[in-house]
Length: 167
Image (cartoon, helix red, strand yellow):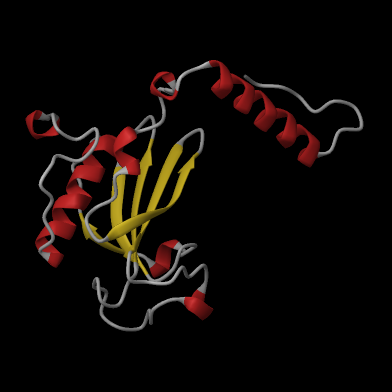
């Protein structure tokens, strides 16, 4: 639901109004009924050895950022792993998956910290054009599995049918 600011209303008050409405909606619906067409379920099941650090939904872009389980949260250069070394899972704690709605294009890259700029990210997988977020997540998981050797017994959430994806 979209809504304009009321006269004299602060951004904090408008945000609180939205959060209150969302909580009220959640109270009226069972958790298994919570669904949104732009939220990708597979995001919440990180690659083995990673934790979800950020899932940002914007009108045109999804940003998913996973942090290695053994790494402390680093938001900026002061707390991250060294960025001047060859990019790898040993030198970059964050795995970024970005997808653009409309074009369906995506990038999969490593970064030394959470709020890395484009020039600080190193692409590790080149996804096919128009693959979308679901396929980019699958490709990122496969890359981590190949690089780190971690495997999982069960299929990832929301990913079980993606092996049949084709252009």
